[in-house]
Length: 246
Image 1 (cartoon, rainbow, N blue to C red):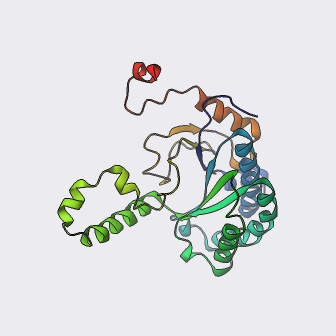
Image 2 (image 1 turned 120 degrees about the vertical axis):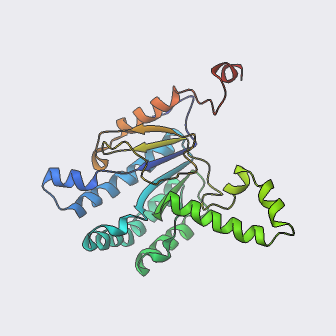
Image 3 (image 1 turned 135 degrees about the vertical axis):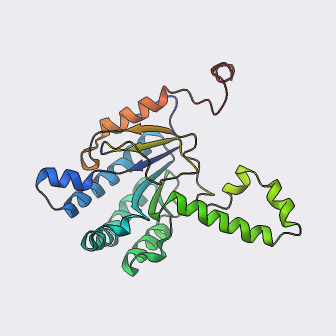
């Protein structure tokens, strides 16, 4: 699958519906997450084939710690065991793993698996796989505000420095500073919200919602999302006439 025009540079996905899919199949919730991990591997390949350069997967949110302890432990175990197995294939297909979020709270084995994957794939250039782990948009913005406060205090004239700070300058203090803004945000599972995901960088993202649970989200579904994106008019505050003139 390829699109001649309008391919998003950065696609972000809220992979929702693993547990509900498992319940529908009469399976444990953790099996839903396992099947969801298989879908995640496939969608990275589909994105790379389409020409997407960065894909973010909301793998574990800052709020997910409140889930049942057994489920959280199972998710961390899946991360620690499945990610290392994918590294050879990611190297073969040019996938570079990057992390967004505070992984210091993850169990040691999961942290090590993540760090090893990043190191082993750091020279790959076909597509960036950004795993969002222990991530929250509010938490990212709050961390950015704290960073700005420290930066301002180190300036000769803190008040003038803050007055001169614009949105681009503030983004430099966020965790996502070296990641492109989100062009297309996909959420599966039938919900219609962004759940504290990329709050700063979805300001002008196109939103696409699918009723399919994540484990059943297929290549045709992903193609439909890209095709929908390709025909949208992205004005960024301008008029249609201005966009047409360009």
